[in-house]
Length: 140
Image (cartoon, rainbow, N blue to C red):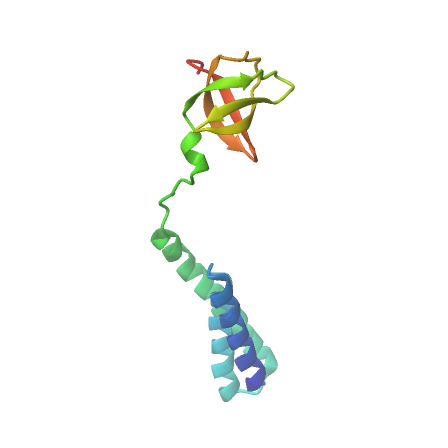
């Protein structure tokens, strides 16, 4: 049974290295605990119980620590810099149809819950997929 726990441990570590997202590290530690237990007892039931207990305890102990250590600084992408910009409508935006705006020389599809005529100024609120959601300048 020790070989199975070694394979499980190494496999779970491999998954962790591939995903780099703290996905399986707790289970790898559990498999290591079960591997150590397999040298003490041949009972598969006890080894499995140790695996589950060690995995759960490790998860609950380290998860809050990882949340505190996790870097939460958000780095905006190039697209995100259009949010908040005042832009001019180049193709009329209707509440049920996409229009167009130009931001930094790039034409974007634009949507709004109100109509906006060509030449009017709108503010980019957010990005949804490949379109900008805009509202009238000065509108809250």
